[in-house]
Length: 436
Image 1 (cartoon, rainbow, N blue to C red):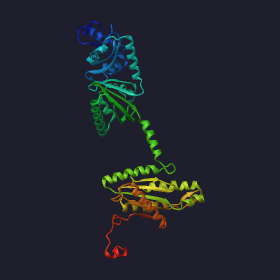
Image 2 (cartoon, rainbow, N blue to C red):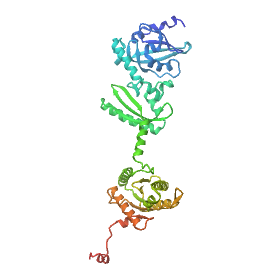
Image 3 (cartoon, one colour):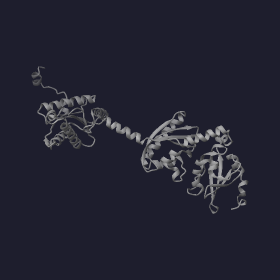
Image 4 (cartoon, rainbow, N blue to C red):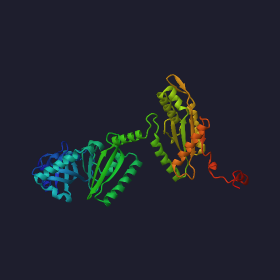
């Protein structure tokens, strides 16, 4: 290749750079390109004239690793200042060359002139700061073509690792392989974009589980806004934080000894279940279970034996319940069971199964086989019940009735809807009750 063979470049009115496809070195540029980039010479690495970021993005296009993407808008650090430039590649394969046609955005025309040294140094410093921030930063033009992404963005989503120069639409395919999840995320994103456009000074946020470059799904929190037509998104990985929060929630709602829910969590869940049952006009039952003669176990064999019995009873209860049922330890030897969508008959069936499971095998403690049994009181939601506290109080009364009736038994109050309804008394019954 001779200098004369590229003389035609100087005759073109548009800014042109000719780049060696093998090493991304600029071999020629015309006067328009020198003026646009603020450089008296165009002999050197592509990164010398556009900055490392833009050069890295252009390299896959220059060497033919990816197909032509039309005009590519990139954030550049030129010898003349910071600028956003458009690039259209045209490869000459037989000479291992790529011709880049450059275009300056009108809004950024002032940045194409040489700035004062202090401002230029500040811009370079600012770029380096943004590039090394511990949060992801991406900038897109009005058509959602990428202008800039920093190091953490590349690390998390991997654009720089596969040579792909993304449009924002490409990200949805990467981050959400599942069609339904992708559709939900896009719908949510569009709604928030409308909010941002309606209130330009505000920042909207979203949090999604996203597939990342390393093949793992991570929980990522995004915050985004528009400055003019430029779209800016900042994001960070909150997977570990959410895991710790969930672990703390679990610990806060878990009984340490038995592993069941604790009293606080039971009442929270019961309140939610009652509200849902009331709204959907469905059934809801509650059981209260008390281990019979538990004090004598503690007194005779010690508290360690009592703890072993509590843990074993809790495990047997969990094994006997259905999917969707919830068991909690709400007192010393007292347990509560929440039975969604369950009427009086279903509640009694579950309760009888619990009794059978609890007493089926003695609990082995220090060589002693301790027989264990329990009493259970239950109730179900009535039409005039207006709070879950009413059900819990009624289940407590049923439990006392079971213990008073000899223990190791189930009592459900009322027995049926009919029993709960006020009964009309005939003349003979009214006379017996002194009502006529």
